[in-house]
Image (cartoon, rainbow, N blue to C red; front, top):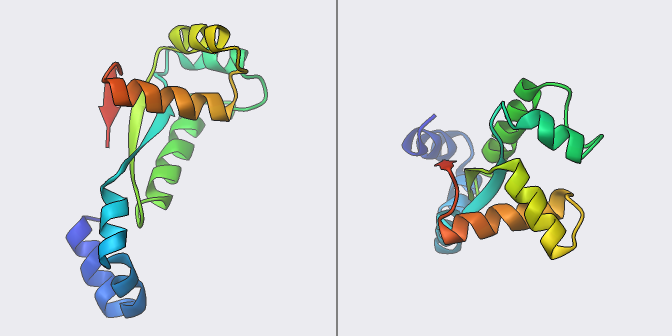
Length: 123
């Protein structure tokens, strides 16, 4: 569903949500990208090994979860997939003396996004 189609639907079906979503502060917030940590299918097993118990069994489940998260934030923010190299991420964690947990992944994705070092980004 495009942005215009969503707005038209909300205007008719949920006018209060439409007004809330389209107030000036919301538009500013939506314009701010939120980097989302993402890895390729080849890198996914390395990530699973480094972060045991934190990821679904299959890469497809991982991709589905990321996409669902991006859709879930679509009313207020713009999620941007930042594809990272897991080895580089783990090196960054070691150098920064942090565990490779969700906070570290979010911080690393933001840093990579802000410095334009990502190998790939998708909106």
